[in-house]
Length: 379
Ligand code: CO8
Image (cartoon, rainbow, N blue to C red):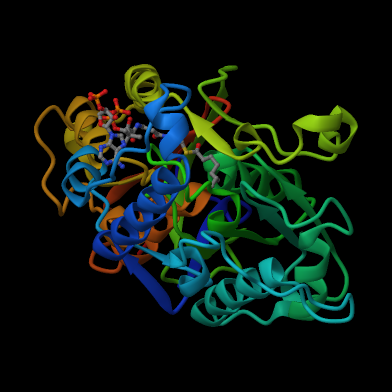
């Protein structure tokens, strides 16, 4: 590793917005099971005739054992839990008002700016990097740029599903290395509750809402308490195992609109089996390239999809069973928040590290996609 230069990109600060409402597994399962009972009663004849399968109850024990999730934050709790609705209700806003996705992104961005002591007017670019963009255009990032009062500069949206934030960090770092920007915000607002089929027993427990922001800056302008970026690496490899077919051409497909496959769907077990080795190998290669060994890593901030997956990946990287201190969990309270997960873990569990400590921010998900960002606390 070479020593840091003034124009090297660093992580200056992070920000987090957490929606006020939280849904426990108990509340979620109670709502799903009421829905399933009603559905079975309504379809009793068809079930008895063998034309359709009865819906089977969900269980809190399964959810916690299979995923590690205990609760999730959402933008609208009561409509999600209402068996007649089972979707968030977020009233449409007039065009003159800040859109809801931009609003939570701005909240996280403001926290990152405040923690860095940075005025929005000094930021050159904003990337809105997330799984579900509220509309095609104008770009959410441009609306966030305007709401923050950034003035000159530019913004654009990017979507690499769960890996959007790490892809955004590398993009921001590259802008800085190339001299195209000095200070870049990577904002990841995730209202996953809008894109989850809450009536699907296999996946109704998986996701939660949140927004994160990462401020990436030139070393010579960042606050003293920053994180050196030692290296970033990105990878994609096509897979249909996590898919979302929602899109503007749905209306051109005649009768197939609004069917269940236009929401998040996955082959969870295949994802688990294929992504664990892919990500473990990627981390090992990247460590090798940087001349790092697992024993030198003080902490892993892994993508927060599944606690068992993280246990396996952390074991392969560190060479032993990771403690909660070495690989902290936030999915127990936040569930899978897509691109924001590893950033929430970094935001909440990095303050105690000391100058010189090295860690890894790592995302993985749909695409498949994966990103690794090795960081070292400056000082
Ligand atoms: N309650 C009780 N039992 C259940 C439930 C339930 N809710 N659901 C399933 N079961 C049962 C099944 O019926 C099955 O029963 P049987 O053995 O009798 O057939 C049994 O439990 C086991 O089912 P699975 O094999 O499906 O369960 P797994 O142990 O594999 O656990 C998981 C399922 C938790 C989904 C697990 O496979 C997993 O987490 N895999 C990794 C997935 C992952 O990491 N995905 C990341 C994708 S996210 C991403 O990239 C972002 C995309 C965009 C996000 C925005 C959209 C909202």
